[in-house]
Image 1 (cartoon, rainbow, N blue to C red):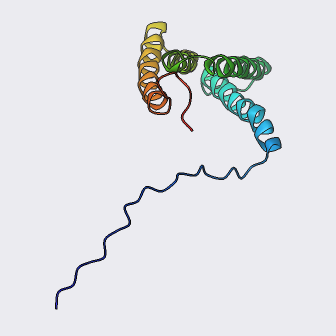
Image 2: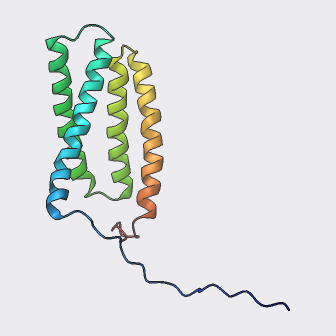
Image 3: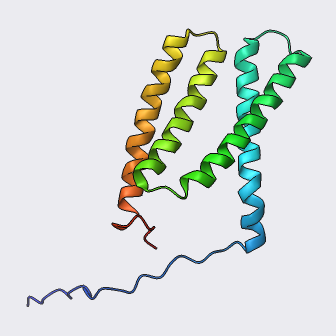
Length: 147
């Protein structure tokens, strides 16, 4: 004898936000630790590109730390400023930062300025497309994040 299959429950369920597993202290530490770690990796990468496989010198180490310091300062400034902008400006600011950062790394490897600028523009355009889509789909019409 044939029997009807049970129908799935189609009632909309209340969406609850995921639990925050970290306390406020952890978020406060991560707010500064993440840019510092990323900056140190970036500074090492820039120093290694500039060194080009040669010996590590004191000037090379100094260059890496100064690059890391500037990167962290710019990252924190962009993070603070971008939070106040609407989605277009937010995406444009972060994509300009990413394009300049990658362009600088490519330039340190000995590539020409035109090549570095071209790659930086391509990377910035890709970042802009992805970030604009993300901010566009996660904000309401007034630019407030949808929670």
